[in-house]
Image (tube, rainbow, N blue to C red; front, side, top):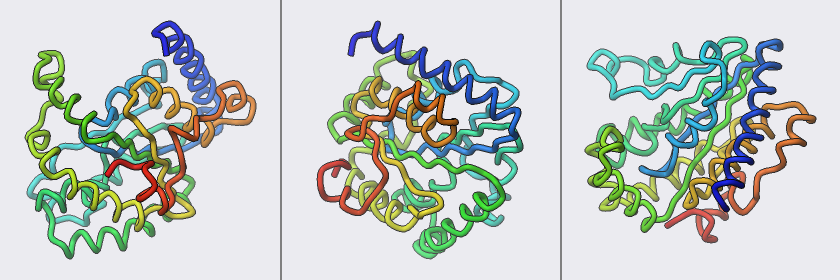
Length: 252
């Protein structure tokens, strides 16, 4: 895809997002989008394109730091609840409570029992959100191991990406299989009829960004806006199903 084609398509989709938000403010929609994925999978860049032209007052991006000592003693979901959307708001979690399904068990930041309790509780917690009127959209951005290595190397060598570098980057490749196993368990246990996971093949950043926005519009916008934006490419974006763990759609 040429830069010109990408820019033109992105602008069209961003206009559709603006049109949707104008309606959402009138209707009082409450939308929560959860971005999860491998390190360097493109979450930050995708979120940036989504929110670029949206209302600052009605759009929030939440990226919480590691929990404090006090937060570690609270109910696990407690520190996320205050960030949930009110009427007319779009809230995007750049990583979320699903830290307890990925980073925490892989890195030993939670116990096996805490991991299991989370996987048991999260479907019910999210069902309560939906029943209270919150639209919950969960996106898993997937890249292969070689692509992750290239992106992590680029972070370390580019001074403009210095703030993206974290201690976890150093072990992302080393613990690739552990993260794959944690991802598989998370998707199998927490993808439900009310709050399914949508998977995004994100090796190509630009293609992934465009298709993520199309997917969001398909789930939150009225038919006239959806029609103008087009449908996401099923080779790039697809609803999670167990077969995807072994048929090559998700990186091993």
